[in-house]
Length: 488
Image 1 (tube, rainbow, N blue to C red):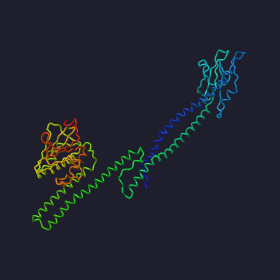
Image 2: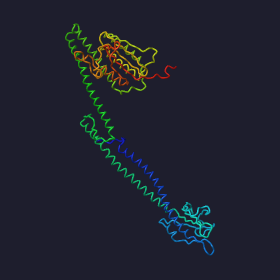
Image 3: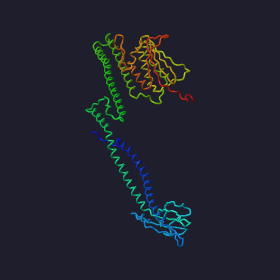
């Protein structure tokens, strides 16, 4: 049973948030637009009724036959249509020639001469301290030259109440929409994530009883959106399986390699106890012990170098720069005594002094270990009286190291396998050559860490001829010298 961890983000909660936040913003936008639409709708509806009242009064305007004055017979329907549950107050007046024929004398009125004829005009005003909505129309009455102004005003209580009610219902509907969407999305996301839950169960089942199967996960039931993740997990499982397999093989091979020298030590120590050290057999036993100890020491040194080469990522550390010529000279000088003891001459070819310096991106120690193992391999497997040449060449953009020997070389068919760990080339009789088979594997691991490339080529003899031996070329990533280099 998995225990919920506080602070761990929930994919379902994150998806719900990502969906509901835009939905809430959309609801707010719709609410703002809906409020404007509601206000306009209520205003136009009430204005239409208010205009009807003005028209009903204007249609009853007439000129008296007796005195020629304008008269109006107010119809009951003119005000009855304005009655509502809000019981708004209704005000009106009919003005002509600067005076009020009928209605409220103090109702604010514009100048009729400045208003267009027969046009229905609306305005917001204040009357007796209350906001009112006023509808007005200027009419000409047959027999009268001057226009007549008809106004009807209504307080806005009913309008505001209608707007508030409609906005309340709109808000409730939007809240219900967002809340219902949240419930539906929560369930839908849970059903959508069901394949991931099944995938988790498959992984949990593999780790039962403390073991873990590293075979790839099945892709048939994986949804398309999660496919890249599962493919990446399968790649990780494959690399992990390879690493574990390599580690197991390394442990087995290392144990096998270490067992033989130790067995030699035990055997000859027993001979020393039996015969003493003064006899020829005793001295030969001591020589064998010394040789076994040297082989064991070399093997352990190579194992440690291989472990250092594998412990970090392949990418070189940023900002580290090595002087290729300086490193090559120091490493070659260190290898000369051992080469002379084996009867091998070591030569060093440096670039001309006026050439620009060759600097490579990488740790100088790693570059030195790479050249040291490559040079040691060329010396150890060379013939007595042979020659090994170390060469620094290339350009500042593409510097390279070359190690050339005139030994037996490596068959072209075997050059792809010599970089495998503990692989040793067979001798003419079919037996493996002496050595641990780790030298070139260490060189390859260090080259990967430094971002370098290594190639094994045939050694050139005369023009158009091939000579026995091998030419190993390591190509590095160059580092351009700084424009300020050398300035004091």
